[in-house]
Image (cartoon, rainbow, N blue to C red; front, side, top):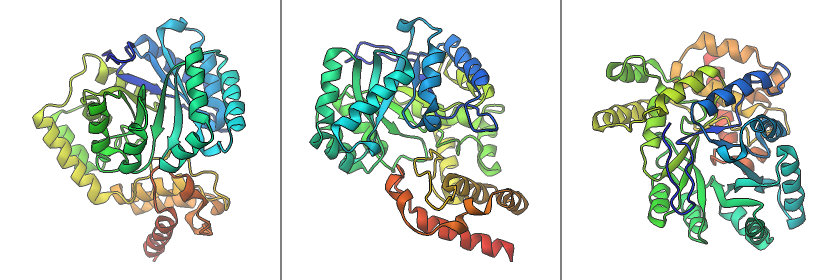
Length: 375
């Protein structure tokens, strides 16, 4: 496992981090703790020492499970990160209440990293005005958590505003070879590098969208490196950036854990020939994909009952694989209330979407394409 030193913090996180938002689940939707524990154990034995959770993950169950699961390891042997859910914070008292709840879930009296979660320009300004940022800094001075940062979903101009507002310990951004011009993007990466702010990357495989590419993309990868996963290509691209300290992978199966460990053991960034292959793959993806939903589920629950991420997953699968029977079968297995046809256009989802997607417009386009498919 490769470790990269955050010079300003004097810590060495593993280049592969475990994102604790996509554990395997039971039929009732709860975390399959036996499988998830085995995956965490394997990752830890493979050298992973950075574990990232948050208040919302697994409908609130992730923090509780991760706190119990990591208790088996020596406390000084890993870094634990959680995040303040800023979308719920409209007073300082609310922030304090949620933080206390989080520490109770995690069964900890200290954290290594604590981040303002899912902020953009407006939420950042609100956190400052409410005194939440000053309160967090006081917690840091008290040693309740060691390092303070933020996770960002917004436009580059907002990222610049936040990143330059103070001397941050770190920041977390969505970054992958398909999103170089979205959100903070490559400009945000360069700004953080220039300012000496270490980066933690989320969605390196774009919510799994880059793990199972269409045949036209996979053929490019196989021609260069037979037997190497599409996920490995995506991870190597982002991990090759020198100011990326940790790449978070939301692993859901033991196979994904093993594949990622292979990628990060004796890690090698992409060479120029591999970069050229990836550029061709990105161009092919952009030609086929319908929208940029990552399946993070921040938009949920929908007041009308629409399962927005599932609708977009089916739509993007349709765009990439263009398999009418498969699309129709999966659509037919959905409950009627969860389909895009149940959207009432209220817009509540768009206020919460970290990708800034035109969710209502995309659901309408999905419905129109489905109607044409059924003719």
